[in-house]
Amino acid sequence: MQSFAASTYPGQTSALLFRVVPPGAAAAAEYGGARLWQLDSGDRAGYAAAASPSRAARGDGWLLHTHLRPGTWFMRLEGAGGSPAAAPADITFRIPPTPPAVTYLGTFRVACDAVGTSGAARPCRVDAVPIDESAAAAALVAAEGSGLAAPVTALARRYPPSLAGTGLAAPSVPEFRVDTRLWLAAIDWNALAAGSAPPPQPPPRSQAPRTDDTAFEHARLVSVLASGFDAGPALLLLPFLIPIALIVQAIQADQRNRRSAEEAQRQAEALRAAALAQQQWSPCTAAIAATLAPDNVERHLRATLAPGREAGRRTALPGAWQTTVTRVVFRHCGATPDHHGIEVATRWSATRPGEAEPAFDAVYSRTVADATLDGRLLHSTRPPWELPVASEAACRPLADYCGAAGSALLLQEVTRGVTEARDAIAAGR
Image (tube, rainbow, N blue to C red; front, side, top):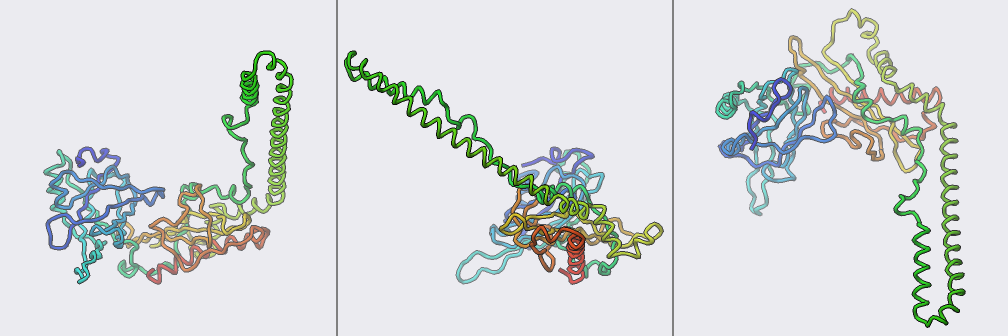
């Protein structure tokens, strides 16, 4: 259980209240849980495990997520009807810059198919379009909110949104910009393009051979052998045993030195190869960095896809559509170290005249074929709110991106990531 009073930082965060119920029933519906990500910051991991303000509220299906920051959020309701295989419901909602103490998201109904003759579990799903029970939400907060203000209703929207349902025309000449916060947070792509595998590290001190331990082992061996004889024979035996122990030590020391020398040679060769590769490819990687710089990409997209708006942008009225390039990643792909592709993510939003909140807000990404998983990426695989476009970017040798033709290819791949997202919106995908 989680009290309303402990679910928000006044003026900084909001508590999120919503309800999940089966159709026509007062009891709580079974569902697997909800996960949330903030789209504006591109969180790596989502919030999970909603609580309830009280047992009675839980019994009525009321759920609470705590301390949500202002911004646009994506929520996935999973496992309806207690079945992990049930189709999830994806929604978005917005917490305003001055967050209310409690934001009411809506009430979601769970629908389940009829039970078949085989007795198999019924497939269930959450309806992503909520119904408005603002009065019931206000009554709950009044009864259990310890004096908190009434909740502000911000009904969730199905994700992805449908262009047809917004009454907006398809995007044709949007306003372009880049969000360098997410761009730079995604990855240091230049290091990925130019960096070589680091040379092997020396073994930890605890694993390195220790001469003193080996010497004590052989001294103990001599002592054990000598103890099996009388003093006289032992004195005669010792001159023979000690040289043998010293010979063994010398052989082991020689092996260690050889291994150390071989390892040092391997490291030196790796460093020489890395230096040679850096010298060979640095003009190319510098050109790639300049071509894919955020300001250069922004200028290119405006000049290529919105030349009229770019020419008169200082006096033109703002259009309905805005496109934000949130990520461009020069990404390794395939089985060889010199192959890369261009991953592009864009966020598209449009606002109807006279309205403050976008009527359409969605994120699309064009990923790279056979991309290598990389822990340095904020999202190494496509996150759940990014929608695929018609194709994947090709995996090409690094040499293809060098020179004037390479720069043109880079910008062509970025442009294609944008235009395929635009076409997917127009097609209703």
